[in-house]
Image (cartoon, rainbow, N blue to C red; front, side, top):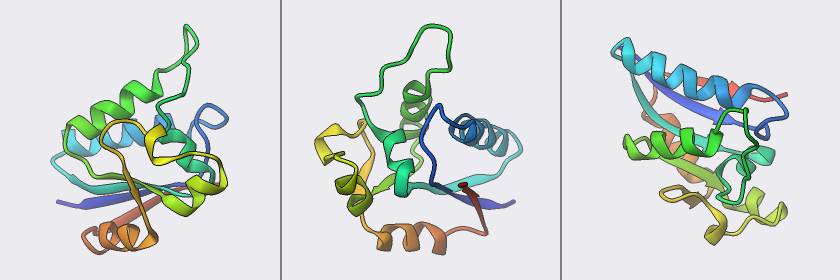
Length: 119
């Protein structure tokens, strides 16, 4: 079985990347694989904001993020990228780590494969 790591560099709702991330994680678990963690980087840090307002009829990405955290998947955001975008640690969804690139390195060192969502 494969242990995946995910790097997300894009904002929610502008692209389908975040929704695809959650679908891929579910599929990986269904196939018996595991996830070392998810790291939100550059604009991707917005995905972890608890301030996201979800419009009726669109995928509830914050809810999907919370389910992922509740499953025990390690989720972290780049603290420097967050600060540049006005996202403080207190703004993060419950269970998301406010971390450095060293955390991404740790997640990556535990994984067999890295999947990146970017431009």
